[in-house]
Each structure stands twice: as structure tokens, then as C-alpha cells.
Image 1: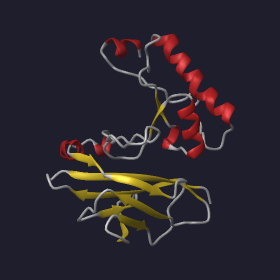
Image 2: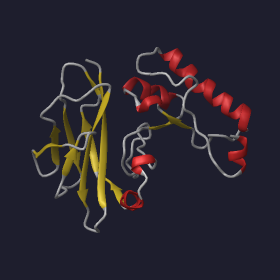
Image 3: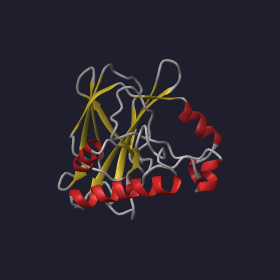
Length: 206
């Protein structure tokens, strides 16, 4: 890691033991984050992963409680959901595109470079935990209506979406989502031939 750092690689916080956080108490979660941050800085220097302080969720899993702890500790949360970053992006839910193995094609890379954050005002429900409400319904309120919307689950299967008003969209699947986690991903072509892209994580606890 030190050698990689000398060649301008950067390292961010990913917890000490890479355990599922949403099942743990606040002290345990805080320790996982702060001890990992201290170890990074002890080994690689005090400026490592500062300004901003970034934290990548183990297994990409988070809930409202974990988000609140990250905010309290002044960390930005990095998810495994895909999408573009904009001025309105929630700093506890920063998306990222995969660029390895099956996701590493040049064509796919160009598409990802040409994505735009969807102009979202709000997303409901606020909780991303699925207990008895499988499949869940996602309600997205936009600043404007986006034509040619398409939505999918992680397998790539297309799912339903309905405009309930000019700017409000309901997204839902006909089948139950699969453990341990799944996503609703929606895309729409923008006027400049780029793509609006939004992905929403669900964690299934049934």
C-alpha cells in the first residue's frame, strides 16, 4: 500500500473487520470506522483519507441508523449502488460505477462517463430495509418529468413504473426481491443524448 501510495493511489476507510454494520450497536459501528481510520493514518500518514473523510460500506449495506452515525463522525458514505453524482446527492449515499471484470468494457465505460444524476427532490420510503413488504414500492419525486424512463432489478429484468403525476414516479416489481440485497435502477435518456441514472438499494431481512 505504501508503494501504491507513492504512485498516487489513494486509500479510503472500509472498516476494520469488514462486518455487516446494520446488525451492530452504535459503539461497535463507531469503533469499526474510527479504528480503521486511525490504522490508515498510522501506516500511510495523517493526511490519508481526510478532506473529505470517505467510508465505503462493507458489502455496500447501510440503513438510516448507520447513515446517521457516519454523519455524526463527519464521514462521506460510499455505496455499491450505481449512478452519477450531482449537487443534490446525499453525502451518505454517494454512488459509484463498477469498472472491473464483467463491467470493464470500454463501451460500458463510455456510457458511464456520459451519465447524469437524476433531478430528484425526494425518495420514499426513507428506510431501505425490507421485512414484510416484499416486493417494495419506491416513490420518486422529480424536479421535472423524464421521458423514456426504464427501470430494472439487479438481474437486469425490467420492472414496472407508473407516473402518478407529472413529476412523481412509482417503481415496483412483480416478484419478490432476493436476499440479501437487491436494487431498483432507473435510467432515462437526456436531451443531450446522455443518460440520467439512479439506483436504489434494498436490504431483505425476511
